[in-house]
Amino acid sequence: MKTRMKIAALVAAGALGLAGCASAPSSSSSASASKPTGPAFKACMVSDAGGFDDKSFNQAGFQGLNRAVTELGVTEAHAESKANSDYVPNIDNMIQQNCDLTITVGFLLADATKAAATANPAKKFAIIDNQFYDADGKVLAIANVKPLLFDTAQASYLAGYLAAGVTKTGKVATFGGMQIGSVTIFMDGFADGVAKYNTDNGKSVQVLGWDKASQKGSFTGDFDDQSKGQNVAKGFIDAGADIILPVAGPVGLGAAAAATAAGNVKIIGVDQDWYVTAPEYKGIILSSVLKQMEPAVFDVIKTTRDGGFDATPYKGTLVNNGVGLAPYHDLDSAVPAELKAKIESLKAQIVAGTLTVTSPSAP
Image: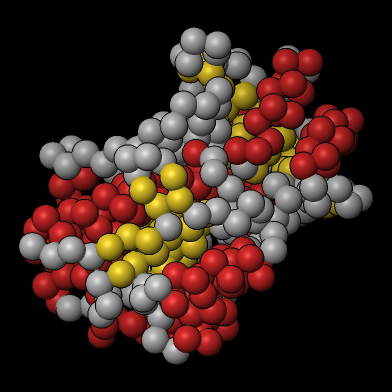
């Protein structure tokens, strides 16, 4: 998918090398005698419309900000966006609060971030899930903006292989909140993982909801309305799917509700480990595709505070643990030992560079 801007793929802080909504923005100061001393540093964040309690990527980024407050002694301010129209005023609010670094969470904040950074060249920014492109489609570096990108296609590939190996019906499904690169990259990897399983095992597991070749599939149109996720998932379940990967933030929890009601359907979460962040559904969470945003956010704050900010994009991959596949938790026994071993082997191949996972939305 060619768009003016695209994203990618979330890493132990030591491996990052980077580095990482509105209602009335809130701020807090957390310096104490036990924390590092030095010049005051203010780290700030603006969420996407899902909010900081979305159990997904906004929440993960916010956890990185809070960790920096606790461990580094920085002060913070944040603004939670309720609609797209909040992005510009929320970012402007952070600028007015004299933030040393403002982190914007999500692909949809790209235009507002670019405009603010261009108008305020002395201010530093980071954006999760986007980098910028010129009219010719070439990467456009903005000196005061650091992109935090994640190649989630790699981990989603493993999730697709897992789903294909566990399904009882021979049908699995995926859908997105909106058709943007930070969503479809998951769906691309998932579809390719299923295809790999079919090739390796002479099977014909079907993927409902996404066709990688045509880049067409099922989307709810937003990241907020859980009833839409529930309805889309119910349609897949009625069509025979027994494992679903919802790439839709809070909307995905609607799919989890539909799976729970069905009684024989499993969910693969995204961004964070849903077994932990959505424990009410832990009995149906097969695994989750992890985008390690918390350590990425923490590290970009620390690096910037220490004077090492640069605009070189950070790219989270399986190599640096920036993306990954969560444990199987309560459903561990549902995954055959041979399948677990194969998934580990595929991961090792991707890390070694002998297996390449591609997506039009990869960084």
